[in-house]
View 1 (cartoon, rainbow, N blue to C red):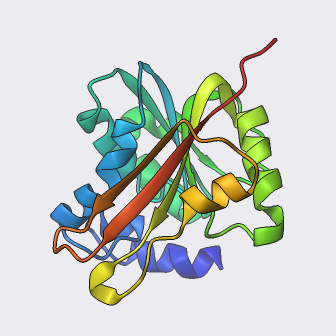
View 2 (tube, helix red, strand yellow):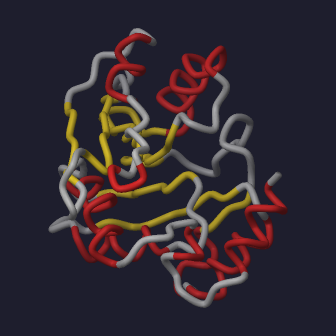
Length: 195
């Protein structure tokens, strides 16, 4: 499966398309900029499913805080693309499956999605990220995307995260540029601080 996505991402020379995004810059910003609003201090930022690393670049630009970006991608070829595109961060881009990956460190902010995690494993996935990947007191940012113009509702991560038994401290959504409904919703959960 990762080889199929990897080939599709590698067929483009546009960093948005190399991130698996088919829209223009306005739609990209509408769908991704709310992530920067969930960053509330200086720190490290891990993008799970970083693809070309374009979101890493954008977060550094969009947030008023000093952010050190990191990325994780399932596809070795796509992670290599990100390393070539972003040589200044090449040693911060990892290859692995977020479900089993052992990070070399913990991160203050971790962005992920749940759409690629089977429903019966989502609670364990969120718990593992909060316990092993997000720094104590850091934020797990869970995003769900959609497309009103294609009649695709956002993945309801705010509802899902609450149903899994986690209490968000921040919930956001952003309207698609053409209107008609949200293009993204996100929820942020604070990782427990060490006792």
